[in-house]
Image (cartoon, rainbow, N blue to C red; front, side, top):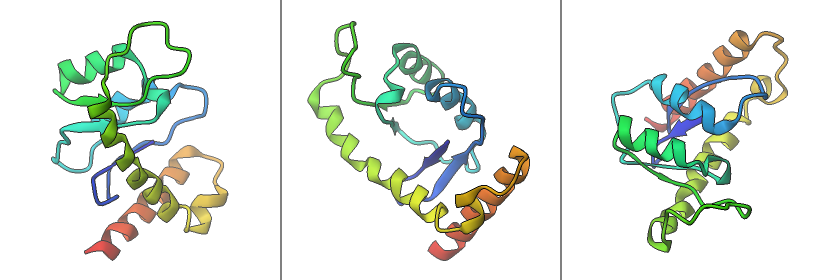
Length: 133
């Protein structure tokens, strides 16, 4: 899991097993922020379409969650087209993941333990940050 700013630089990272759902990992990822920078809104894919997550982010941080609704959503929509226009900016997260995947050790995941893998993901993020400044 990664949270990046508008320049595709990492704000928070979290490595977890594949079992938990992404919407359940959003709050722990936000707690592990590296910076004091607090975004006004979060942009996520359809996996983050969760009304409890929206309420929790609004209550705890005052943030707006921008995620398109799933096609099988039964509840009425909570977003209009104006906020979903910002969803186009999600390419910044994908750009960060492509930068991280350029490091062979991170891409192939040679490490058995998640702590070791997370260390190399953090090292790759540091290198990305240093290249940008």
